[in-house]
Image (cartoon, rainbow, N blue to C red; front, top):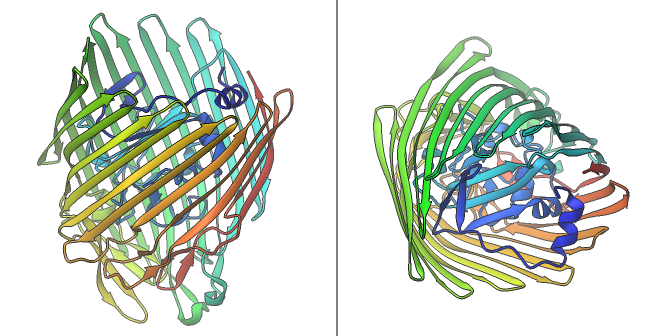
Length: 623
């Protein structure tokens, strides 16, 4: 039942699943939410093109990385996730979980999307807004929860894809049952890509080369499922290296994580315990670019080892019309940024952060309504923060109305406090004196589910205090200097809508987000457009699947002064799969179909996003 073929065949005839009203905290641990939760299964992940999960999830309204770049070419430090216009720096204001285990980098909060193989995911849940008090400071803008494919008695798969830009990808995975109650699963993936220029042709000089990535990673997992107990352990690793667009600028990363999760069903509810340990080292070189981009000078070599250890205890109990979830969590991260400066010198900065929290989340049904409330006490070092949340839903036939309010915060990352970095001739300084940023939010919306149509609409307003952003300190023809700082107050308000319609073998999806994100003085928050739109049309049968889609954003600004304007853009894509016989499938995907040039940033030289990317390959699945 776990294969793509049965999933596709059913989805062509069955009505859509009910609108999600819960957030999954960890496997088998859920909590009700008065919020818009987008749930993608294997079908939605398969029909959307993209080598890595970040490119596929861009079709969800509000999901974006710090810049308009893909993890195929972007420096890892810019791969933090933004939801609903909360992302003026590379650090995530969104918590990303894989089987309940955080994957945000312990030093900087960004996400290594190359470690997450989309074909090995069973589903993805995206909850926008801090509508629950269960999660800690990294979930100020929401949470993205990814879940591995369920273990099976027998499942094997392998694939190979090749494409333009010198792209080659191989993958393999499987699951089997060696003994009653025990399952062993694993997968591996490797990719090599020659890449593309990130500076437009008219601005290139002798120092410019193609930005590219090469990576290899995988995971091994053991599951034990008893009548009332379940345990999984998992180890995953990643090694990647990147060329960052010039002769001297490169970076590489090695990381590994070990995690375990145990759940026990009791007569009164469920008890869950989760633990993990991660180690990672990021290495990079930085340079200064001469006039006309004809010369380049090495300015520093950087090494950033970091590690994190954490865990959570959860207890859930429910009855007729009510649910209660309580627990505690802890995370300790430490790391240091070591730099060799050229022509001479050294610089080092780092430290450790210990955070822990206690939380409770409850809901109670009364007539046609469900009332929700939660409270979290979070300690980040010596600072204490309380995160309350409350909400209500009202159901009438096919309709559900909802409203919620909440307060959340985010402590500065070690990266923001201690690591300086350079993009071309734009330098961003660290700030060890940074304080936490806080958010107060409210939202209201309505959902409707018919036999063939689903519709969801949400209005939201988020008020941010002491927002951490990159503040411009000086601008000269040779150098732009910025520094991370608590820039004061900002407000993000807007609306989002999504619709899904099925008829026969056809399905159409459309999403829209409007976010007006401004500082108190009226300037736009950097890297946040006012509008994001996406849409996709697909056709499926038991042997063939085809889809075409488009996504785009309106204009946005690169910097806090709104001096560097990035025009809006729209790109199209097409994808398809065809059963060739037995367990063999042919696959093809084209991203940026019309080869549009996407303005992605300024360094201060203009930077561009991915051009047309074409891939085709073959995949084998045995169930």
